[in-house]
Image (cartoon, rainbow, N blue to C red; front, side, top):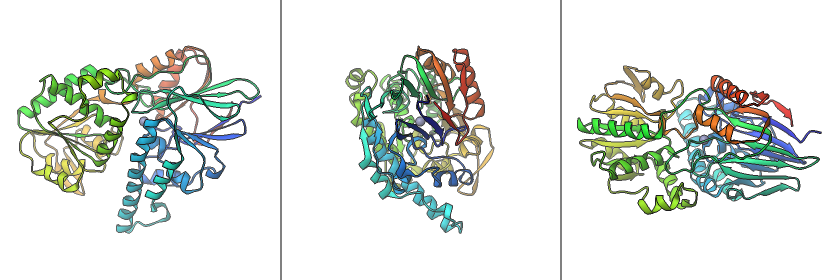
Length: 463
Ligand SMILES: [Zn+2]
């Protein structure tokens, strides 16, 4: 007898739009409700047209607060979803920051398209601020390892995924007419990240595994190597009087970088230069970090040795636009961290326009740069780029450190699978482009999983 049915409505054959529908015990439960990100031409209709009636969903369980995992929650609520949304307490509080920002992006993108005469049904904002706030009313914070029953025979609990603050893997038990254990990895983090705890894979036999594969085909630099390289770059660029511009995602990467820079300052390994975090969203996300020391790694140690983990004299948080503009007139060396992480939008663009032609400066990438982004063009060695439609010569030094990624690399994904311990009957590989997903399937095969599927968007499977 089938324990239920699973349908993949996102992050199937790609990395964004995470959303999987589980039908079991008479309930319809969504795992994640993420936004598709990337080129508008390819994502607009995927995002706008939900493949089911949200009023017929009974519960939503989200893994973590990245927009590609929660960004369609306001849309579901706008279209009539009114059931519970489960999240860890830190994820709940990050949603309160991330979703209003996503609504703001929706509205300003729509306004931009309208100004440029590109108004169409698909250029309408998916949702607004009121929808984003309405989500918050439905979220129920559930700590790690607290078993919760969605139905009499359908329970789940969260375990640490080690990816960003509050991130979780989801372990579900379907006990109607048998015993079926389903594990959804969420996004798996790295071991040894300073603030976030290490991943803690659920152990024991698994009937159905849904596992991410973002970096299934490559390894990152170690966190120690990354700190050494950061130190070397800061010293070298500051020594010649230059500025370091770091495009970074507001949630996760910024806080890890700030922590890493603070450690280097405390150890006198870098000169005392000012560090500016120029991102209102990063400022708000950092406030949520301060609220949740209970999920920090080695939390007592972290709080005792640096009670001001995210505040130190050289660090300035910049929120107001006028203050951001003032950074253009700074003299001498400084570090400026700003979103977006792929240099496609946000305040980093102004800083790049102002600093990219000066060979004393350095642009330092710390995250994944997708194809067709300004970040990727710079990394690929472009000599001239367009920013706000204007050509700029690239004379600044371009550097990249991979060790600040929040995603497990190939070796860490294998370690996570090994740590599951028990046999895995069937595995679905999600959240990866074709090559990494195939590499992840190979890892699973080598670890003894016989039945491995890389599902397509919209494909359904009986459990
Ligand atoms: Zn994520």
